[in-house]
Length: 412
Image (tube, rainbow, N blue to C red; front, side, top):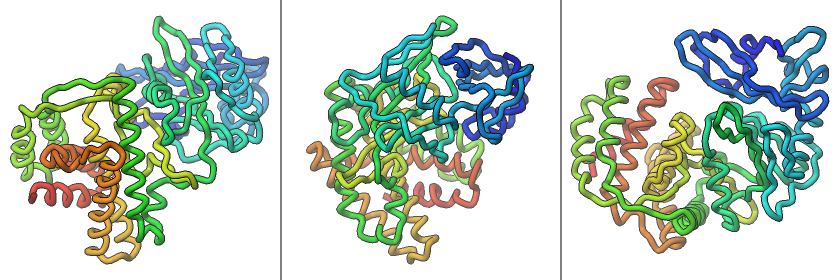
């Protein structure tokens, strides 16, 4: 196979190597899934010595022009994930629990994957490609491949039966280069759903307290089941880890330097505190929850995409997820303010909904996350520090949001 992947890759939204110069982009292994459909494990080497691995599904001689990768001799290759027939072939392989060469397809016991049509490719993804089949199931194809157990598959499988998730229906993986790579997963599609961010920032979100309470119950239920099914452990509070992260971000964000000593003191004061850790969501915010007629669903258990896989699978305090949601309410309040809401009213909205979320968490677990107030504030600070680094790099005009939050947290 000799397609011009090095020219095609940089224009793909899920490609994470922007800013680097590609030395080579070559198929490391190719598995024929059908007469005109190949699964390609693409090895991308950069001139700076780094390397990444991607999954590309190639449909030959059939596809829309925007999906065109290029020509290989007398054949033309297209990105198969925009092709309904090719996507349906993947779903059928999972439904049948097939194995083709080193690629294993697995349907979960008792799962009904539904019809293979109609097919709709979702356009909002940055690191994966998702395809919806008949409003019943959704196939998520992992584009960038990392060896090891994918936490999204792992945790969704562990949460089977929990009413606040979209059930896992199947998955597929490959053994390559003496490693196991998870390639994709099929879940139940949450039809007629709205993500929490859209709901919270809409004008109707003025009266959002009851939904925040129900959302707290949902998150508590997920945490409870993860603890029961995957276990817990007690470790010292991760003060040094937070300090290291703070110092690294402060190098890039000069505004943090005046606050650095006081933040460090908050972390160090908790260094001897025991912390009960378990598997958590790891990247929880209003965009990671869906509201349906039946209530809330927590989705996307892959963890923080920028972290190594080992870190994303590491047990952590449930308070990290709680802090992530509280920080998301703060961002939603800012969005409401830019849409015309008075500043004090927006601040009051965030405080009311944060309290309602925590009250709901109590109802779902009998645990009040605010009881360990200093610890919860530390996790909020840690999240806000991360946000400061992100905003300084990608959205400088938003940097005041996490900086203001840090000042409020330090004032308590």
